[in-house]
Image 1 (cartoon, rainbow, N blue to C red):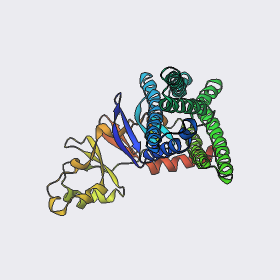
Image 2 (image 1 turned 90 degrees about the vertical axis):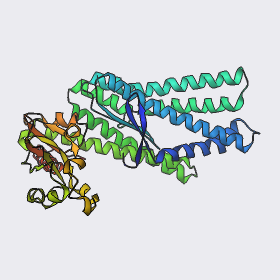
Image 3 (image 1 turned 120 degrees about the vertical axis):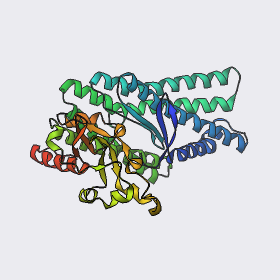
Length: 375
C-alpha cells in the first residue's frame, strides 16, 4: 500500500504501518476522551480522560493488528503465500495468495471476525470484572468500550460483501456451489459495491444531521466500493485469461550483460533498443541473472559510472517473477510474490518476457471476444 513504512515482523510476516494509522489513533483517542468517557465516568480530570482515551485507541489498534495476524497465520498454516500485513486508518489488509479451495477460503476468512469477537468478549468480561470486583471505573470503561467496538468490528466484517471477510465467505459459498471461482468473486464484488454505496449514502445523511461520525462511514463506504470494483474487474480479466500459456504471450526479450559498467550500459545499443524502463540481465554463461530498472541508473554520479556494475542495481533473479513457457498464465500470477514483468526461462536461459503492457493488451482483447465486461 502506498504511503506505508516497514515496522517489523510478526511471526516472520512483514508488518507495515500506513501514515493514516496514527490519524486513527488520534481520532479515536480524542473521541473517547472528549465524549464517551466523560459520559460514562463523569467528574475526572482532562488529563485522566486524555490518557485513558489514548490507551483505548491503542488497544483497538492492537485488536485490528491481531485480526490481521490471525488471517496471516491461518493462511501460512494452509500453505498460502503471505506477503505482508498493513495497518491503516480503515482497519488492516493482508496481502496473500488466493486460497486454492472454498474450504481454505472459509478457514482464512472466518478466523478474522472470530478473533475480533473473542477479543470483544474477553474485553467485556475484563471490564465487567474490573468494575464489580475492584471498582476501577475508568479502566473498566476503557475495556468495555474496547470490547463493544471489537464486537461491532467482528459483526461488521461478517457482512456478505467484498472486501470484507463476510464477502470472502460468500465467495467461498458460491464457489463451492457453482464450481466457478471467478463468478463467485464477481458476486461478492458486486455485493461489496452495493454495500459500499449504501454505507456512503448513510454517512452523508448522518453528516447532514450534524453527526461527525458520518464522515467515517463515507470513507469506509468509498473504500469498500473502490476495492469491490477492483475485484470485479480482476475476476473478469482472470476469467478471460484462463487457459493461456506463458509461451503464447511472451515477447522476445532484449537482454544485456550484467557485468557492464553503468556508462557502457547506458551507451549499449541493445538497452536503448529495448524501449522498456526495465531490462533483463544475463551472466557470462548467458543465463538470466536479474532485472534492471534503467531509471535507477540516473542516481549514479557521472564520476562513478565507469566503476559501478549493472548487477549492483539489479533485482536478483531470486526476487523476480519467473515462469516456464508451458506454465499457465493465471496460475503464475496467482502464485506471484513479485509483480510483472515475468521473465520466461527455458533451462535457466532467457526465452522471453511478459510485460504489464502485454498482459493488459491481451486481457482487453480476450474480454472483448468473450463479451465479459470488467466493471
